[in-house]
Image (cartoon, rainbow, N blue to C red; front, side):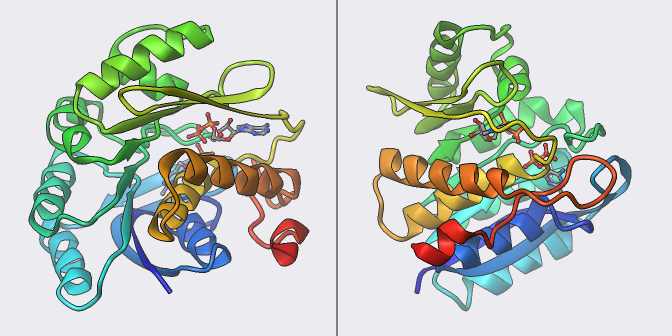
Length: 263
Ligand SMILES: Nc1ncnc2c1ncn2[C@@H]1O[C@H](COP(=O)(O)OP(=O)(O)O)[C@@H](O)[C@H]1O
Ligand SMILES: Cc1ncc(COP(=O)(O)OP(=O)(O)O)c(N)n1
């Protein structure tokens, strides 16, 4: 079995963050480990408060995993600010895991900033250049690339721009656009399109976390990038289709649906 590590925030309501990542790692047959970067008091409707994890214990958690266990792939999610970004970037440069997938989490679906906007420069300078794959949503692309995104051509231009910043691969998620659920992968040479039906549901809490951790697990298992993304999107689409109407706001994706009992 391959070992996957998530470095991300904790969502106490279980839909996003390390909780979504660990459920996804397990559902896809990998062993999941977690380094907590922040504790977020949030639910399906709102973010109440955030406690950043002290940098020393953040670094110690990463050391504890890497000094003892072989890590096939790392997923990086919420990093709340400059200090945590610098610490994680330094540890990733030190341990050089074979795969690093980063979801540059900025804002929760229910509203609420999960990244200090002042950390944007650090994200671009220290983290984007070390990742195997960056998976921004449309608002995140607009902030990182500094350009508005309306069309698939806009997505292509922004993917090229983010690749130039140092990400080996860029997957722009189109969930925030209208029409089919269209995502675009760029590997520096080729573009790959991934389309799925848009499911009519409000239960989409944790979709970005689920997709990036599913890609991480698939890469850990040895899939090439386009296959890892295609399979992860199949998994995610079913997890949304069978999403759970839990809570008063945006319910979470469901990791234990029939699709995975059959595969
Ligand atoms: N209603 C939906 N039906 C099917 N797929 C969706 C739906 N909403 C989002 N997706 C897909 O979920 C993934 C995450 O999308 P997005 O909402 O853009 O990111 P984030 O969750 O980070 O905001 C993408 O693959 C996107 O195409
Ligand atoms: C702790 C934590 N991390 C990440 C997110 C955002 O997750 P995402 O998968 O983008 O889902 P939405 O919340 O945007 O639906 C989070 N909310 N909490």
